[in-house]
Amino acid sequence: MSRHLYLMRHGQVEADSPASDKQRPLSALGRQQAVDAGALLADRGIGVVMSSTAERCRQTVAGLDLPGAPRLEFQEALYLADVETLLERIGEIEDEVTALLVVGHSPGLPALAAELSYDADHGDADAQRCAFPVSSVTEIEVPGSWSSLAEGDREGVRLVGTVGASGAYGASGAYGASGAYGAPASC
Image (cartoon, rainbow, N blue to C red):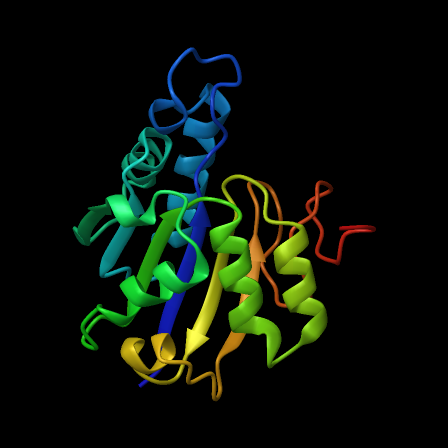
C-alpha cells in the first residue's frame, strides 16, 4: 500500500512583529496562503497533521481547515527540527495512516524533501533544498511503512511534486517565484 507524505512550510509571518521567533504570527498573506494550501490538500485524505508548536505553524494548520477531522499533533520537537528528528517522528506514525502532513520550518523540511527525493532524481533533490518558499507543499510517495522510511528504506520513494502559493503541481522541480517549476538559477 502506497502512502503519501506532505511536507509544508508555514505561511508568511509578520516581518515586524515584536514577538519572539516562536510566537511570531502569520501575516495577512500567510493566512491566505494557508487557506490556499488547504484547498490544494482538501481531497488528499490527510489522516494526521504533525506540526511544530510555533505560532505560525499553529495558525497555518488552523487556516488549512482540512476535511475529515484529521488527528492534530503539535510537537515541540518539530520546532526548527532537523532531518533526523523529522524522520524519527514520521516513523512513529501508525501504518494505517496513508496520508500524513508535516507542517514546519526551513531548513529542516527542505532538507528532508531533498533527502527523500535524492535517489529518484538528483536535480529534484537540489531544487528542493534551494527553493522551498513559505507555504510550499511537497508530496512524496512512500511505498513502504512510515517506520521503514524513518529507518532509511528509500526503495520506490518518489517526489510527486511541489507547489507554492500560486504555482502548478508537478515533479519536474521546485516552485519558483514565477509560479513555474524548474531549478533556481543559483542556490
